[in-house]
Image (cartoon, rainbow, N blue to C red; front, side, top):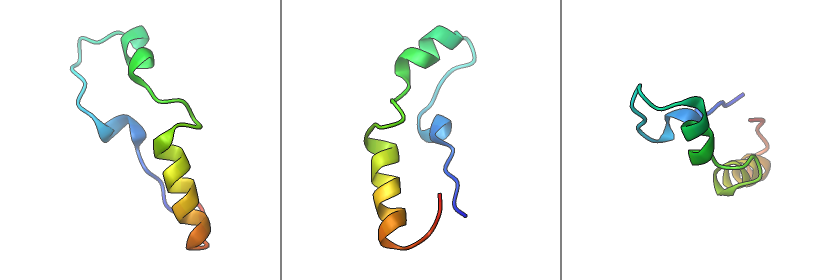
Length: 47
């Protein structure tokens, strides 16, 4: 099992609101998750 903390892929300061963080986030079917899912499938591992 591999797990990746997408939230930690970029710097955020502690004063940002939940709304601001939400606006910065990538959709679940975005490039990050899609790329990781593809690599996992090719290597027969679960993420």
